Image (cartoon, rainbow, N blue to C red; front, side):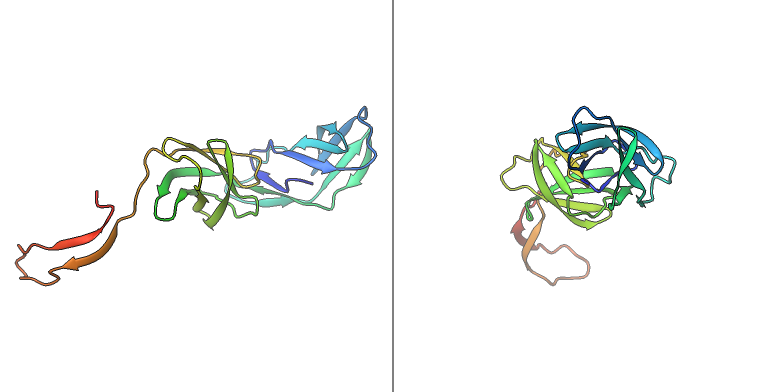
Length: 196
């Protein structure tokens, strides 16, 4: 079964690999008791995960009662679990020039091996920092004005927004005249990069 997780809002295309199914057969997925019409594609049964909005939208949970029905006979009891994750919420998209990474801040940024960003249609792996931050390497991709989308399972992408400017981190290398009168008024010289 791929993928094994998706958003509470449902709609994830889940593919079950099978053998010996005829393309003219009728198939359904039984999803925790809910019957969902499925499509047969080659040797696979494909269905959309149902919405789980009746659950608390801030809570992740797992469904383990998943089976496939072919021609109205229950054929396969799945050994896999499908994990629902809270719907992603994005607050800010920025670019850290020193790391050369797009930084996405928000809520419910779930850790997974398929965590990814899509920047100008280029899918890139993401690095999970916390439930409120992920980062995506932006090597070889134009950043300014780019639309950024994020996905926990590599399939369901959520629009994160546009990167409007490349923010550079201020780097302070040295400070001349580090002492002076308490009343102030002394000139100091700062050496570094990215002063704006």
